[in-house]
Image (tube, rainbow, N blue to C red; front, side, top):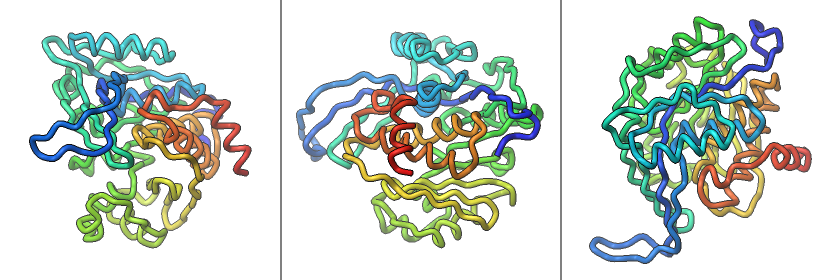
Length: 322
C-alpha cells in the first residue's frame, strides 16, 4: 500500500540505529570455563543493526541515509568508509568525541551463537547530538533499540509530523515505551523476541531454541504488544517464513529451503528489504515475500553485511518461488 501523501513517489530510507565493528570467529564448540578453544579465522566486519539495515536496503537499490554515532577510533573511521563504499549517505553520521565505537565479539559454532556487545558511542549519544534531519512524506524511517530511545522517539515524532512511515525493529530485548510504540506504523521482531516481550512460559522453557509458534499463537501474543489497531506487527519465524498481522488479518509467507550457514544479520536483511519494497510502492504481501527472499539468501554465507544479497539475486529467487 502506498502512502497517500507521497503521490506514489519513491522516497528515501532513513535508518537511525547502532553501528558496531563485529569481531567474528568460528569454532567447533563453545569453550568450558577456563578452557581455550581455537577458532578458525578472525573477521572484522562492519555491523550493528543500524548499519546492517542501511546496507541491506542500499544493496537492493534504495536511496539510504543513516543517522548514527561512531567513536574517535579506527573502527569508527572504517565503518564510515564502508558505508560510503556501499553508497549509503552518511550526512547524519556523527562522531562522539572521547568515545570508542560500538564493538561486538561474536563466536559461531554451527547454529549456536554467542555475543558480547560493547555499546560504546551508540549509547553515549543524547538528543542534543541528533542532527537536523530533513524527512519527507515519501520517506521511510527505520530504527531499533540500539541507540537511546529518546533519540528514536524524537526522530519518529518528526517523521510522523512529516507524514513519513515508521518501522521499529524490537531488538534487543530492552524495555520499550508505549509512547515510542504509538509512533510506529510497522513493528518487526522474531518469534523468540515476541515470546519474551509477552511473558510466555514457552519462552522460558525453550532456552532460546526455535519456538515453532503457529499463526494462532503469534496472533495471541501480538495483541499484547500492539498499541494501535492500525499498527502492523511482523513476526519472523526463521526458516518457516514470516507472519504479518494488521488488525485481525494475517498474511503468512512460507519459508524457503536453503543451505544454512549463518543467521547473523538475517533479521536486518529482512527489515532492509521490507523497507525497500515499501518505498517502491509494493503491496504488503509482496513486500513480505521480497524480504523473505532476501533473508533466505543471507543465511547462506557467514557474517551480516558479507552475506547480504544483490537486487538481481533477490529478484531471481522471488521469480523461482512464485
